[in-house]
Length: 130
Ligand SMILES: [Zn+2]
Ligand SMILES: [Zn+2]
Image 1 (tube, helix red, strand yellow):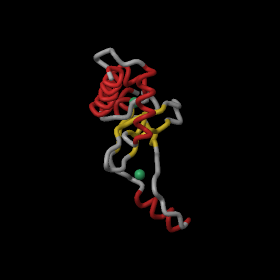
Image 2 (cartoon, rainbow, N blue to C red):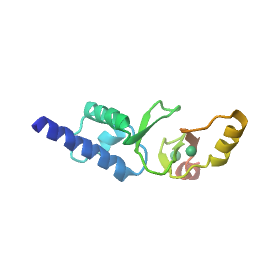
Image 3 (tube, rainbow, N blue to C red):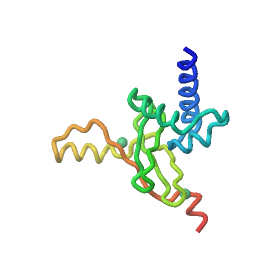
Image 4 (cartoon, rainbow, N blue to C red):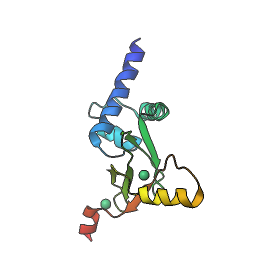
């Protein structure tokens, strides 16, 4: 029972960190954001795997860093922006691809159910720096 309680506590801590961050994080980001210092990387990986199966989080894999990025699943469909210089991630909470998706459906006859994009670019901070 005590083991179970502990487990629940760390799950809650991880979900809180993801929720408060408001942007996608990898396991290392979560570890660094853990102010209590009780989480370990293996706990985080295990919890994230479970969350993904339970449909609580979105997982995107960056093709630049190969990082698995997790974010709390929101009701609205959205996308991730990633800066190619500082690898900052920002969650875009709307879909800019609605028109494109419609066109794909018309051209291919596919009824699209899901799509998953990371958009790469240079963030405002990095653009200012150069
Ligand atoms: Zn940047
Ligand atoms: Zn979309």
